[in-house]
Image (tube, rainbow, N blue to C red; front, side):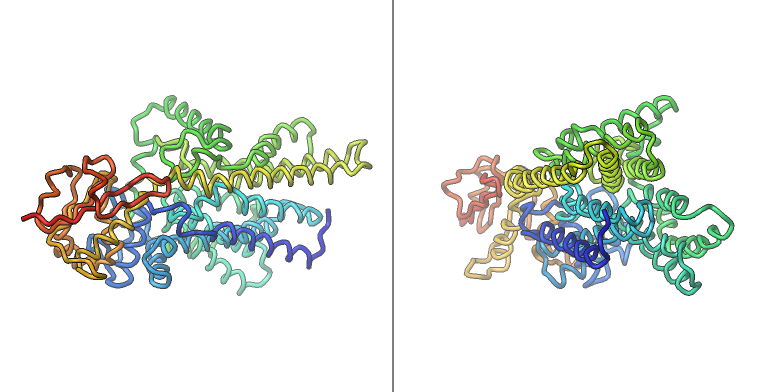
Length: 529
């Protein structure tokens, strides 16, 4: 199916616009609330921009200590600028991730076109692959929350595109420029998310082998990007060897003391769980709704079926698509590695890179189905066009079902997982802390810690200077999971209790509701003696 060049780019831009509408629609309120990881990214980004220090007063760190773990740095640095422009709110925190996802869709289509896995007459398949990514629930979810994996994926895709461009470049100055930019983006993806440290280097080697013949000349072309990458990665390597950059490696199966046979068995079991329809299509076996799933799957049924059909169809018909099939399969396996090599499988966040391989595999499956239709005796009845149209309508139906669920049912179900109510409760508490907006100033704020990590929301809402925080700026606050009726006798105190804590709702000055309609916080202003 040939597409004219002008039409190709019209479709290309249309897909990006569709992806942008889906990702920016009510970005600050769906999902409602923000997780404490999002709050930590937003606050530490603000702290770095304003003071050059994080919440622990570390100066421009490479790894950010957070809740007993360590976060990669680049997303936090970018968030400083985003929250400066859009404010310290969910939209400001999530904006860089949503914007990056649009670039990921564009980069994915450019990358496939440059890699030349499909013939020129199959350019429409590249557009279909981009459309599948634009409508993919997995990618959509991680573009609408402040999790680093989607941002890392976007930079890696553009880095791979520039890598392939450099390998095909005919001019030396372009070779060095493209190699340098590719190295910057690929290494930046490692600075954003820990799982990329496994996926990106291995996939870069695979892409090199598929993009060009392994000759002396091609290896020489690879030399500039290798040198640039090593130089840019020096701080990351140093932090991994002597700092906290390798802390997450503790969840890998290699660190659990397994024998070789046990290790292999565990990885095979985890891989099966990671690629199972129960996880990918139905969204089952997830640890938390903040990672998506629950009432919707990570890939639409049409995508999964086409991907699953690709391998048996090629084997059965002995078709000439084996190179694409091998590349797509490797992409799925390598992209899933951070998930199936860990103790946490199945895991959507760690396995996000695999979505590109699954989509490519589905595109290959579609290509084979259309080829079979074209070669059948029914082709004169426009069988290929009928199949393509039917699949397109089915895909849109499944997407519409997911989208309705995501913006209604999931938005409500996930309220507790996204710590809904924290920002509103702390906004009220901050008014009483300062005695502004007609509120009397209190001596103490007793705040429930039942939902976990309340301090980071206090820092987020107050935009607290980290130096002041460590100097006692939060002394007015007392965080505890033990709040009872006796606390209402305290003198001039604001008591912020959770739903389960036994204080009468009828006496509350404020009730903070979550998007699920349940009470999240009960707020009382005491007078005492």
